[in-house]
Image (cartoon, rainbow, N blue to C red; front, side):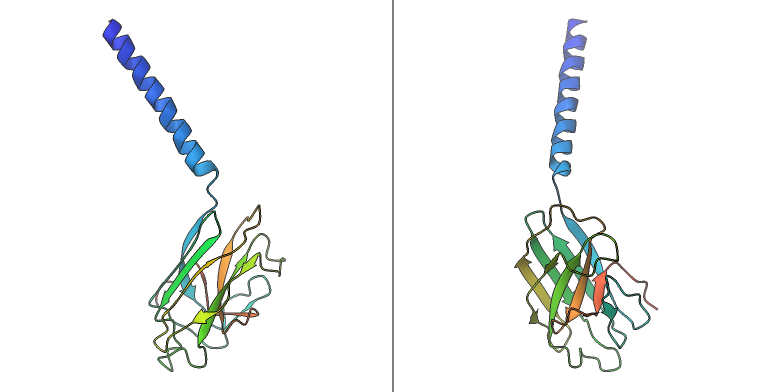
Length: 159
């Protein structure tokens, strides 16, 4: 009987420690991980930023934003299908928006990085994060033009 009581007490203590550790690990985590979806001209505006004027396709894309402000974004095959290339787009940047769509000022913006003729590119930069960021959205801007986006956090089913 004593061994059973000791086993129950040790198990209960281990469970409490595990719950506290999980809560501590997730409570302060301000990270974002998402796939990216290409834009088409009929997509909505987000935070006053319009979709590109031509349809885009994307083989693969993702973005991760760590709690320390490390933004890692990768696109593969981000091209205009009628051209088979990104056309005049030779670089990309990323804009982070927080909160209601009425906010038109990005919380953070990266510098531009090259986009290959195959539509492959990546951004790995540190940005300063706001204390709060509800409903975060990341827009991929062509040639650093912050008033347009050619990809956005989310996903689309291939047509």
